[in-house]
Length: 261
Ligand SMILES: NC(=O)c1ccc[n+]([C@@H]2O[C@H](COP(=O)([O-])OP(=O)(O)OC[C@H]3O[C@@H](n4cnc5c(N)ncnc54)[C@H](OP(=O)(O)O)[C@@H]3O)[C@@H](O)[C@H]2O)c1
Image (cartoon, rainbow, N blue to C red):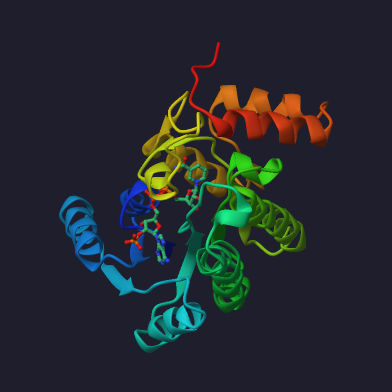
């Protein structure tokens, strides 16, 4: 069945994706920073599905990390069949008040690492005329996001890049999908310090539901997957609204936790 390399596999959506690939018979390369958590996930999956799991501990916000991951795979003789660029983080607050270093790390992880890993592993996928790439975007990919400006912009990049790549690779046998969920019940919101945003709880999906939608979308060759009917209809609505109005609405929703009426 081949090997799936999944970034951000120590918890949340990435961990659920790891289970889904393993259940279908794939061996895994799991990437994240927290080695203990990665080991826990690997042990659980090995016991449940008897797959071979490799762990690579890397901070993908470091510029050289994608190259080191590629080199590790080459030295272990691992040919990657599926690449899942899932690791990512957000940061809540006014742009002017956010530390530049944190914003640059977000760009390194959400944009640069995703691009570099895709570039490193694509040649093998093209040569095999099979497999695929799953890039995790967000509902944020579709709209401007005041109070999380850089995060939303980074996810807009993910969607645009992934859709373009899906077109370039249409006849190649390699599948390319952008998974664009709305709020998901993981530690993402807590890590992003979204204490004041209304987006954290309302209608959030669980990580398994989101991972499954992305996994099945990838296998069936969908270029874009938005899990959940509520979120698909919200997104459909944005097509008919001015961008300026959308930006004000996102700002209002992000701004305070007064219950929505
Ligand atoms: N949760 C949501 O509401 C939501 C909504 C839309 C889109 N998304 C997207 O979904 C993806 C997964 O998020 P999640 O909700 O599953 O979040 P999560 O529970 O916080 O998991 C994030 C994963 O990424 C890894 N990671 C974070 N920074 C890393 C770095 N510098 N280098 C390597 N690995 C790193 C984390 O592991 P370590 O800490 O061990 O490194 C963890 O495994 C992200 O791209 C996020 O933008 C999330």
